[in-house]
Image (tube, rainbow, N blue to C red; front, side, top):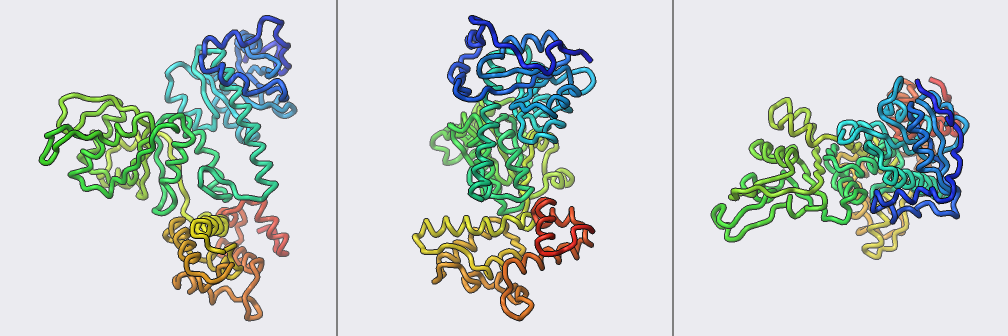
Length: 492
């Protein structure tokens, strides 16, 4: 493995007249964002990893400035060693290095420093490598040969992103509010994983498949993908493939010319064209008729389509996000969904957990929906009673988040109290109320309910703490703190 004579050392400032600003002519948009890191801020810190000393020297000379300190390392080992004692804001690594690859380094960095952005340098036009980089946790990728102005722009954005992320975390901890992304709320581990992956997936322009049961919020996630993408200023167009008759769906998606069929008195632009420069959301894509699947596959492959009745094709420029409540792998097995289309749609998959697997979010979501309903209707409702919260926690929620939202809207509309009481809830939920009485025959406190619930989960799982934390929707450390709080043994 090669080494750099300046490895793990801070770059010297460029002499007067050699500012990296001279590279901006190579990247027209760079000038707009050059001041993302201002002179008043502490300089950003870049760790550049490459086993070619000449490349390390080139990047040091090109990117070093009063706003950016550059460190170099000659491979994965030296890079990880440097990170043990040096705080950096972004790592840029070559993909192909002797020994360990950039993807392996990215995975190691994300494991030890989850909030540290990693940018991977990959060969020009290697979309497969770019997708692998995103899946490995990379913040972004830059193609080679390197445009130094473009690389500087990506680095400064990454530094700015990390500082904003840390500030958001600090503020969230200060006010104790749940994590939220474009209206999606949750603090449970499955939702934290979604929040970490979604912005990175949105930045790419590849197709995304959202999987999850009905009512989990797949369209909300699709809108979040659109809002966090480079197409955010374009239209977001949604269509439910299961809600439109097969005879009309082709025309709805691809459009038609005048006279293409009976009653086609004028031409119509299909949804693919209506979503130009934006995002087309294909909900319940698993219900797309098998006869239309080859035409959708061609659009994904060729970025062109032929309207019904037309003799010519037109270009398509929209991002495809699809969703399904059924497992498309099962649809492949029974022959109702094409395998080649499945892999075209499922470049990146976002999994939405059912509400029963994120129990730690139930009360938080209920309070969010209650507040929204109260603001919308002007109702003087401020929160949940302890008994109501207990009932919500013990319901299975087969309708998932949609069922919980409808439940809160109904309760706010009917209640005569400032806090929702069990009588405000639907009868199917109140059936669990008798199971929630305390040891003395009265209503138990929320702490007692939580203690009993933890004990019940541990009992069902034969005392396996790690598995219990997953089922409860909390991390292992939080579970151990609660076990200590309630005087329960931490070990199995």
